[in-house]
Length: 276
Ligand code: NDP
Image: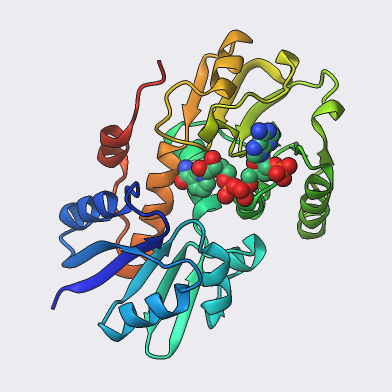
């Protein structure tokens, strides 16, 4: 019997998850059906209940429901607990197992696909929202030399830096505002703000990019975002968006549900929007 999965969000039309998971199912020979569910605002639990009652095996969760899914879950994995948000659920009887694969997907894309080791590197993360929070543990596990979190709202950067230090006291982590960036260069700079979604620029000095730096915008499908353009103007040649992160978090969920990890290279190639 075909097993049913879906992604739930609002809006949901834009989601690439059905395309990705259907492609994964084809290459791995898994018999699954993967659809989109438009979750009513304020009606997340009822929509998931209905999907489970109809035999659904698992769901991906996207905005604005990642916190609702956190509350809905019965069993939170450490990654979801640390992120304070859930992006994948697995249903087994009364149990709702919950994970957050965004951070693992990001690190896997950077280290494995882009061949950019983070160990011993100076890492800067811009933004202190859900994506940064979810990326903390996977980033720290790579043992960077240093992690700096910069955010428009300073208190949030400080809060995440404290959380990170509590997890891994051996790695220097600090939380700053943009004005705190005083000429120190970084080897890897992640833009985990949502500024690129509205083509907004960040007040970032060119000096944050060390020679040979990598600039990675978690936003995908937007071409050369203002952040990537700024990095390019600063002389950075290794420019990437978050399409690989998207594919890798999906592959993690697929492996968790189906016990087989698909290769992501075809999906990444098909979804890549050139950085012009
Ligand atoms: P959140 O809404 O949780 O956080 C948004 C962050 O962006 C906050 O830190 C906010 O700062 C900051 N921000 C927003 N606008 C500006 C601005 N104009 N200038 C400076 N800072 C700004 O979003 P998420 O963490 O969930 O997502 C962040 C990005 O990551 C999004 O673009 C999303 O598309 C992308 N993403 C990509 C994924 C992938 O698979 N590739 C997966 C998940 C996310 P403040 O706190 O001051 O408001």
